[in-house]
Amino acid sequence: MTKSNATRPRLRKRVARYVACAAFVSLSAGILNAQQGPQDPGPRPGVLGAGGPIAGLNANEQSVFQAGRERFTEIVSVSGGIEGEEGAGLGPTFNANSCAACHAQPAIGGSSPAPFSPQVAVPNPQVAMATLDRVPGANNVVPSFITADGPVREARFISTNPDNHFAPLDGGVHDLFTIKGRVDAVGCNLAQPDFEAQLAKHNVVFRIPTPVFGLGLVENTPDLTLQTNLAADASRKGALGISGRFNTSGNDGTITRFGWKAQNKSLLIFAAEAYNVEMGVTSEGFPNKRSGVPGCVFNPTPEDSSRIFNPDTGGTTGTASQMSADSVNFALFMRLSAPPVPTTSTSSELSGQAKFSSIGCDLCHSPTLVTGASPVTAMGGAIYHPYSDFALHHMGSNLADGINQGAAGPDEFRTAPLWGVGQRLFFLHDGRTRDLLQAILAHASPGTDCVATQSFQQFKANGVFFLPFSQNVTCASEANGVISNFNRLSSSDRQDILNFLRSL
Image (tube, rainbow, N blue to C red; front, side, top):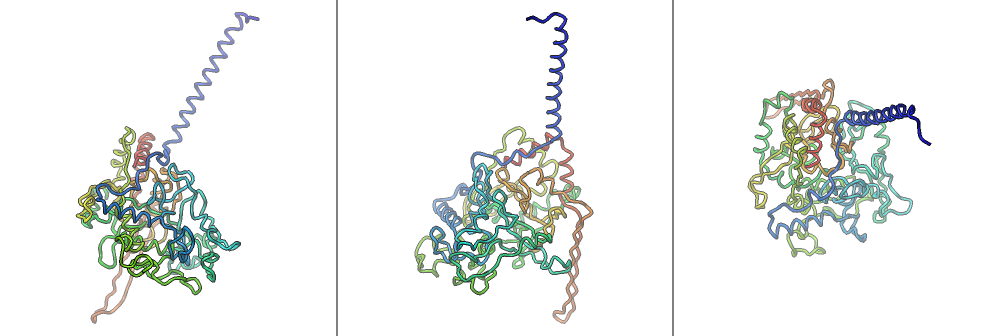
């Protein structure tokens, strides 16, 4: 049956309407995508950007790196008597049982792993810690802020008494688990902290693991280099409200540079502190047990010591690495690790790199630094690209965690190095987001929320009275000006910056 000529105009009109509708739908989708704005492309898949030794090491140095890496992966039990867990000293409280459990993404030495990683698709190892090596029915409880697809975390309490605003600050790490109920800790009855009660009072803050790649270069950068870098571009920094200062050692006055608040002086201190705080293992650097209550201490201390004191590990014979303590090996592994390798090459990434600098991100996230002379030939006078000035900056109330460490106040943080951020899964000091764009925007804070710090002393020395007083008031984040510049960029320019960061 054929249609009459009279019906054909109606068919043509109907087809035209369909075409117009299709065009409208397509246009609407384009407008919607434009309105959505830039998006984090997500962790970069493919080849690992880090994890190996720094280029140019000699055969002996490479051997030391490998030995340190092996020790970094060792699993610790209470007394070393469990198969596959030969390390000794776990507890009485702990967050993990191996350095590599927390520092895993995208390779050993990195940051927190997760099931959605393109490289290390494993769940948060802290979930399994609650039931590992436990007597049946004696499991620890997994705190609500620890999830299989969430970041590895440590928890700190802000106040000693959250019901009293004038109570002394706490600030210390409260480990997630205790050895109570483990098969190798019979008699220990130490209970877990009541995290849920503290959470209800908004008294808990978190930290996630920082990557350790390339840190030997950071350690070997002279103070003067860092000071000169911080003083550079003073007028440009001043116009954007950026200042910054260094955390320093109370012992020798030099710049400290490791940890979220740059509270640790050296990689050896950094390693020994983490061994004690995160796993409970005592060492020559930190020889005393945390929470060492009666019934929960099973080994002589320090548990991690030079092998010369332990005939079971070879006494005075063996390689330098075999003779050295675990914490020394951890530090050597970090010191000789290569920095992450960027893949910046596309037009969008190169454009983003230029925009990153033009809006002022590079004023804190310094692209280039140079090391001093080093006994390791490959590290002397080395030019490296950490994207950090390793200084403290006020970040305002949005990121403030209320923790004081050294000279770092409750809203101050070390500029987080951005090298390797392309393959990182969680961002900011507490891992609150997986979205790089949200992490950038979180750097801004209201100018009405101020942090005031006062210090007053009164004493007599050498027959003279002294009354030193200081007051420091800061409002808003030092990054506000830069974030304002970022927000004024076009959607495509902001996308270029995200693409550039994911290439690092």
